[in-house]
Figure 1 (cartoon, rainbow, N blue to C red):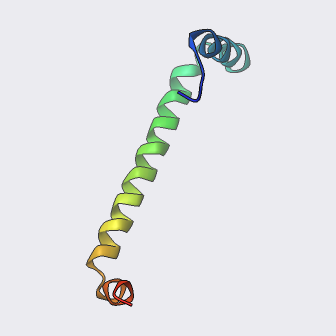
Figure 2 (cartoon, one colour):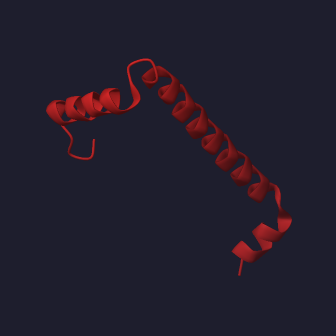
Figure 3 (tube, rainbow, N blue to C red):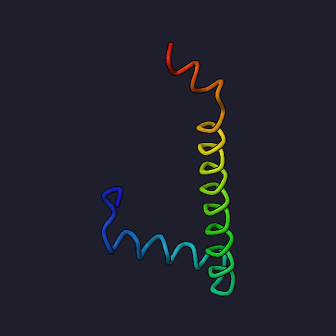
Length: 62
């Protein structure tokens, strides 16, 4: 993933623990996960809304 190996991921995790503390890491992970899920749901809703909109289908035919 992005050319990062296990040593690099370990260093990133270690720096995160030093910056935020071990008690904050799970809370940060939960918050980031909720944000990504919200973004995904919003994009899915936008795509469904656009596909149901007849004006979008007219402009696609041009």
